[in-house]
Image 1 (cartoon, helix red, strand yellow):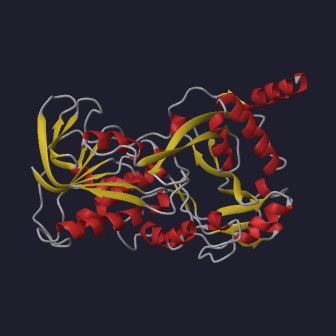
Image 2 (spheres, one colour):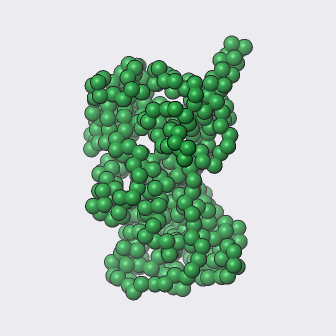
Image 3 (spheres, helix red, strand yellow):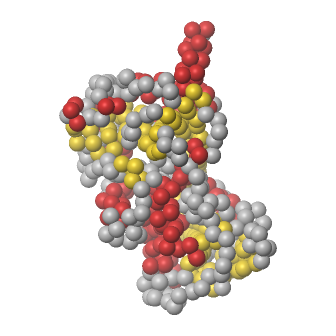
Length: 416
């Protein structure tokens, strides 16, 4: 089958691009070797950032500028006022709370977050605070950053395009036929069960597989050292916890970011990110949980964790390579041969990455088919469709009672 574009990778970046290209009249297929959203998308905290965390040093940054307009863009899609229609996406919260530790550097950080923002924190009175933030010594603010459920986002993006999604095995399930390095002439797919084969002949390939882009580039004869990984080690709490979505600011950093969901059993789930997750990379599971218990006790005075259990998971943030190894300011993409390799850097930047890639495709495909020209529908074959990935904490059975973790930590301190 001849198609305009084949996308490899079914996270938020690939699915958003798929939706945009289909609405522009192109014939597009998406290939996924695992589950939709597997990896970075479902492991994310689902916050649609507005740039405040990048102004904590009191200055406007390129990172803040790159996402300043995006929360409102996302809200229009979430309300169904524009495409893609994301009305079926579940919101964890309409807004985030922002609070600080009682230190001078944290006070400066809170003021820095107000500079030049489209979405600026609004201080609320003590009577407006949720109970979990009642005893925080500093100011508490609200910031218009919606928090969504990544799994429901993936479901909303994938639902209109099920016939265009192809699931294949990661090993032996597909093969690239190259005309030359960087130019894929055909993608041969093997049915995961029946063994039947199907071949796609794309005019353009787009890799949006996150960390998997490195392997795809190798198969396509491209240099693999164009990507970097910045790892995170996330802690997860579950139990009788209050719902909370927000950031605790300490100086120029988000000391801890907490987002909430509900498990299938009805228990509250907390994902713990921010500086805690970045510094937790060098800790093992128990050490990170001990650190998380201490941090939560410090930033949420009076919190009761006695009936709460915890686990951890690791995830790599795959991004385009930068000279200093730090996070790119915005989206990152490379165009070589008939292949575009793309990384959104953050969940919120998926629509911007799609726009950038579409501009590149328009520049190189115009003489054959102008983007926007409607083509007749195409009938893709009956083929296994990829499922939506579970959240990381749904895949683990290794939960630890935090009371025991804390007791063990205190015993070690006394012994030391």
